[in-house]
Length: 236
Image (cartoon, rainbow, N blue to C red; front, side):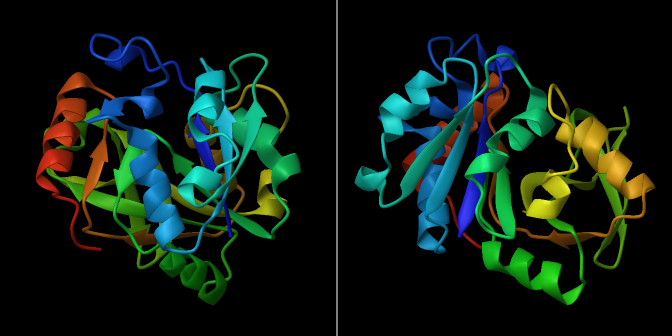
């Protein structure tokens, strides 16, 4: 099985503590953050990885090489200019040879059952499926709403400090849907998914309570460092 890891962002919010490398390569006790992510993928049989690289992207290839040292096959789709998450996904499409592919925000670690998305995609005849997560404060994110296992609304911004369901940053997308993304700079979260919803394209949703963290800000990065030291990654 294949997965695309979106690792081309500039990581500006994390610059105060990680300024010399792409955010997903942030050092966690001598190990890149993204290696924790690839370990999870490999353990669940997802071993063909495509790194959608941008900012300081050669450092990603320097770290993972052909992937053999990590038990994976690694390939690289480089951006000549920032393309956004949707554009990066479209740019990586020539390396996708399966009918569907997992897509991950590589600055997020989420303990989930990846194959459950495959079962959801097939059972619901969806074109895409994604994981969500319940958080105590949605104000940093955009809220996701659903009916049963079908997505109803997406990334609704709120300044309210309350609990809610948010995007977990892990998707399973059919290749045919990725082909619909125009070439060039596009946002998967802010342009493509809202457009797909508006067009009536079925998107499946599954929630997990597994360990979840987005290291996009210094506080979260420090929290993951502490959790990694204690071995706190538990529960699907």
